[in-house]
Image (cartoon, rainbow, N blue to C red; front, side, top):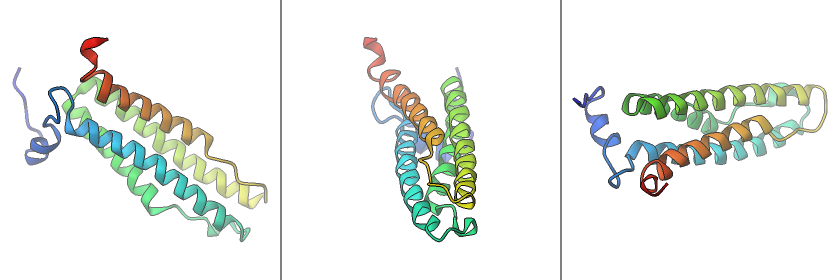
Length: 149
């Protein structure tokens, strides 16, 4: 099978191997999922402090959280060019994480408008845990530990 380099120098870095089985892009995606979870916690803390004013227009998206969402989706699209099956599943999960974050932000604005307590972003947390479980599986169990399973 001929290996095509769609993105040239990007493929030389991200499509290379850390170990015999683990690709750099898999480790990058795992790091992005963990960063996204941390950014969600920071964003929720910021939303709580912004909600104390009682004005829904004061709520704003956390730029670090937006950056990690976009990077996760773009990274999963790149992973789609490297490993088609795992990349497709990762891309669908990453888009699901992005969509839940969009709807969770809007629900926080509704909660502020209705003057009720802010809830945790439960759907986004669940989507992130699914992403973490799948990317962790692809990185660790499909790669180096896959020969033992």
